[in-house]
Length: 266
Image (cartoon, rainbow, N blue to C red; front, side, top):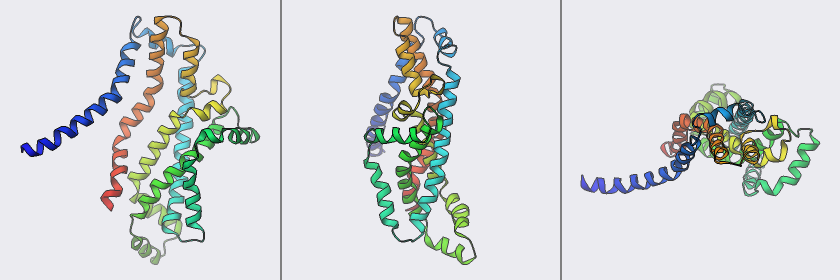
């Protein structure tokens, strides 16, 4: 028993240290957001006339949800093709897509801006969504393809003998068997899209279309003159981060299931 606890205690100690590193800044921000005027700091943010909090949340929610849904559908179809379908040039095409992971977003800002401008998508939600879909897809494709590889080919071959079409194989067999990883991809893409700063900065022009990442910067540059303003900045940080924190907390079981599913199946 003592030997067992000797192995468990250090593990939990390390986990607690990492948890404290993550939670401590949030606790500090939460405490400071109530200094001086308490809940009035939050009331001020919610009724701020220059930046509408609820509009900002809607903008980020729309961008993140559409991006996550689009990436999930596209990569689930592509992962099925690369994993279970044999066609000429598949390895080269898959390698070319994964090579995009080595290209940072900052390195393609100039052609990206020119493309968005030529498409007439500047200062629009879809001007942000399309790049986010493109930048998030390679990593999510890698995750889904690796998971699809763990599903036995014999299962699909028996269904194909029974007359199942290719789309039916994907929809009725691959998708239900891959729910943990698909949910994982959906949640991760949502969080990445919600937290992205560079693409909205490049595309958005009007304040009414700002997502949370740009609205936070605007609020900081507008008020920073007194201790009350500092407390309000902490309040706006908490309010803007709250939706993504809630999404992460309620979906963490899917993240854990998606991370461990491949090893369990293997």
